[in-house]
Image 1: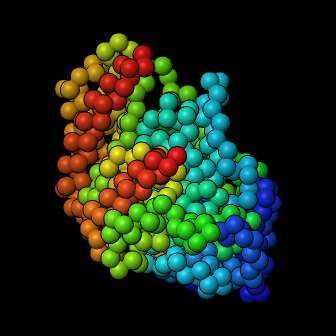
Image 2: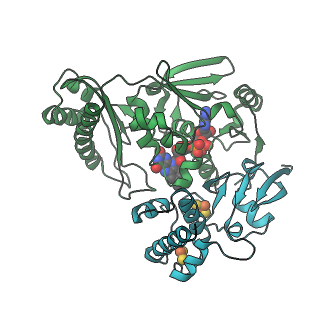
Image 3: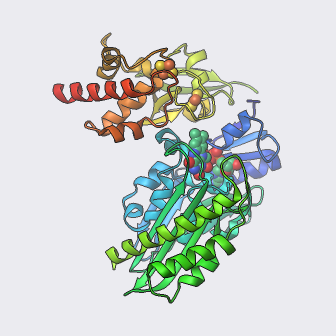
Length: 294
Length: 159
Ligand SMILES: Cc1cc2nc3c(=O)[nH]c(=O)nc-3n(C[C@H](O)[C@H](O)[C@H](O)COP(=O)(O)OP(=O)(O)OC[C@H]3O[C@@H](n4cnc5c(N)ncnc54)[C@H](O)[C@@H]3O)c2cc1C
Ligand code: FES
Ligand code: FES
């Protein structure tokens, strides 16, 4: 690795001013499981950083709180281990606990942060479909104060986000899922662990009786960004929660909601096939979970 | 770039090291502190040969920058023995023949010890999952899992 200047702010404000001072050649560092690998391999999508602003001492970025009134607030510096084992997340945001719980090995999860996963913006990022189905808001801190953006608008392309240079992702806010909601995330990988998603699918269903009130479906690794599957959602809402509905929605997801590519992991055709099979299966599973909570 | 001083506790002993910011924790421990148990297999977080415990959690030290370890408590394979007697996990790997070339073993044993600290009676699946971040190109893993089961039994027996 080529060397760089290393700064350790202790607050978000200090981090923002260090980034500003260093200009475009500075880069924030969280767990380093993407950035350090990319720097070692000279494969950053941006010029090699001259200054690294490490966020590991910014305590306010690390916290996770949940309340019935405000929902879930996850600091961008919370690790995948923190997220996957948090009691409120395990209980109420099952799909997110599942997404965070498959990121690499235990070693990876102990270092990797949710903010790094989002900001690295891989189409296959495992926290992304869960964050999309829970309609997370990204709170962004920058030299001009704070702004917030729906997570769907944060992803702009492979490795690209709506963050301006000098801005930080401060936290993610997730509203409380309505009563009667069941959600699940699963990915397909040839190996069980330590692999990147061929396809990732997150779904969340809110049932009233046997009717689907609200449906959220999100797909990973089948488009330039992780994305919501609106055609599938439209095929679900207002319909009875049964296999026939799930099959129609899965068909819609595979036909209208994705634009997969062929790469070393899988062909585009196989990815579409997976979207269909996985979406139908996960919808049934989410419906079962919803019935358990209603 | 001027070196910067970091202070960290390694295997119970406080150490001060002048590091360059781009050194990894692995390079710092191996090259500056001469603790060569932890190995560099891949350098990219995939193989686990560099596994260490930092503030109670296992990490791949090839991806942690040296200054990120400033003020932290680090345990390497060298820190598992106490007063010259091997940790039960180390002894079990020897007794069960859980190794061949040995390159993966310092990381494997640190990860296995961490697993047994969290869960003294793991099932075979839990052992597989707990060690999923540690690759071994020699053993085929069977003897490694047997060694971890043997270690678990002995630790439970002595508790
Ligand atoms: C062995 C291995 C296995 C992996 N397996 C998976 C997997 O299964 N699924 C998966 O999704 N990913 C996986 N990854 C990728 C990686 O671990 C995750 O994307 C991780 O969440 C990145 O977080 P980090 O804290 O390490 O980010 P870093 O590497 O520190 O940063 C990533 C990027 O985000 C920027 N950044 C970080 N924090 C902020 C912030 N608060 N504000 C603005 N920008 C920020 C950095 O500048 C950098 O560009 C794996 C990586 C490794 C090494
Ligand atoms: S050398 Fe660190 S994981 Fe392979
Ligand atoms: S014993 Fe040779 S790599 Fe594991």
